[in-house]
Length: 325
Image (tube, rainbow, N blue to C red; front, side):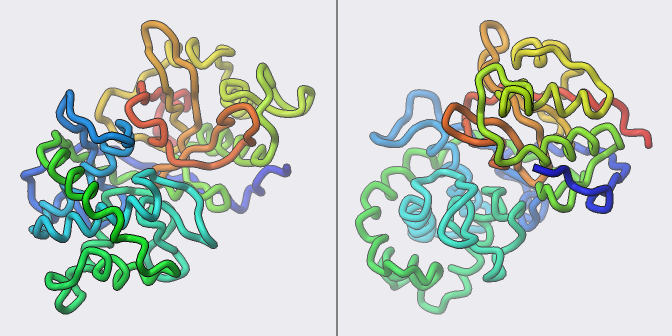
């Protein structure tokens, strides 16, 4: 595929700021835009049959946002049942027409930009705002309240999730959550690239230009007909004039490391696995909670949520280096 033209690039000097506090912080400091997010980890040892760590972490975010907004437990159950039906509590980067995220909200219907909707904190906040503005929702059934917000083509689909939704709300209500707020720019849109410096912009431009090429184990580009994950990131930074090691594990340890808790910038490499034994996957962060990567056999280079691997996230590096233009 062709690379994005230079006119599609924007290089902006940004200064990252980290704001950390518990879920008890003020709503205004946490919610309402796509640059703030809650990261939640359910209490160790808790579980719900049929739902994994990634799904329960997303559920914990939904419940924590509800608590922040003083939404009654009934409203939290409505939100969880909705996300169970729409996405199985996974932050999906696809859906019917332009539907995205935990609640399958649609940019074309005014729910927000794709990057905003892919932020679970933002998506949950928008769901609750619509629910709370619905007259008499408190006296509706869980199914009818969910349908009034979602306007689904399957209007009776939410009822079956109510028992498990109540169990999930009770399970994750005490999850530990931290909040990070990032004032950096980054749309997550390959057609409107925003980056902190020219190096990151060049790497993103290259990686975005490879979308649609197949995953090929050991692939470094056109000669092999595609890429594996680290082959894509190595080639992207080579296009920007920076040499990276070949494998995801060695790229992770090459650094420079983004300190834990510091907001990510477009162009950062995000890694998955165990740093001490094996880092098995890497992607190139685009902003807006999205990355471009070569996911696995049978798939193609594409844009997807960088948190989609849940608790497997190991950290990030910043090969683009200084923010100075």
